[in-house]
Length: 401
Image (cartoon, rainbow, N blue to C red; front, top):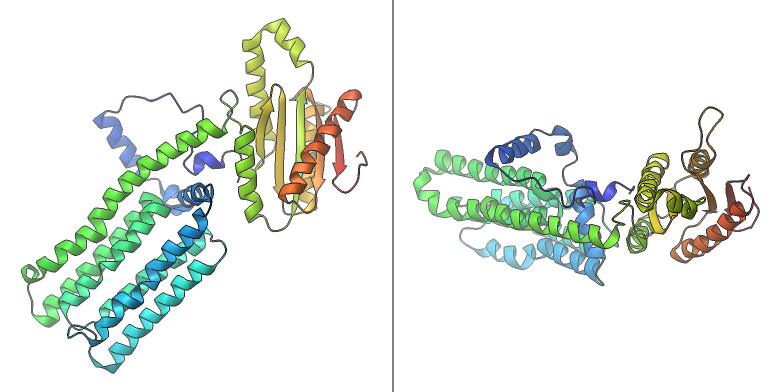
């Protein structure tokens, strides 16, 4: 996750906080139309919302375990709730339908156990869980013998819709609601054609089903979205430096821990950047000019080192933490940092400062913390000789590159 990852996941940037335009009906209509016709956002539907909620849950002790158990229980509950229908008069008629019904329940239990016991989950796995749950509910209801039992059975799709609203956001919920409505409509049509009942006869079953599978999840989604915006604002205020928009120490620590949980292999570059003669610049041009220089430095670091965690440690000192899958990727980060502080034959340096960097081959939390101290020592080595600008060390040695 890069420096701009939080805003994509729902965390507003500092520049956007505090600049609230008044909401008018015309502006609201334009926002709705733009959201509904943003096909790129539809293709990415749910990804950033999942990252946001999963990361928020992970901040609390036991949060992930609770999410595993609660979500897995949605599928496992199909056993005690659904199995009695085998002996119910409105249950599946005949051995074939009964076998399919029981198979759907057993598959749901296995699906729930898989979700509950697996250590961690990705966005694709969450989508897989939801799609399989939907299909198993349809299989378990389509084999039932009476129109009333088939339509009432679809109410379980409402539980899945609640999960979608919480984990994947409103676009994914729209797709889920359309699927549920299509299933209900198909069951009503089949009942009218094959069983000879009228739509009015089925209304007493259809109305609660539509309410539970479409109406209630939409209400929940609205509340979740307001909560998501509020959480994003709190996250930004707590974890971002208000001047530069970069992480502060606390935000860097949280983002770093999140990446370390997901980063099984690869390398990590830890670099500390310190501006040269910043105090003299402040004294000569004033603090406002100094603030502008810090903000511009932050912008250039973001642009120069793509996909890295970047934080302002305080004063004129910044830290860059970049996880890469290969040695080539780590060396690319070093070259980018070198180019920022040394420039090229045709262009002056974009950042007038010095860099101390460390390359880790096996990034773990203690190793990264130790690398920060090593990078700080390398930085002061670079500052002692202004011709060097950047000193790079391997984590296992102290050789200067």
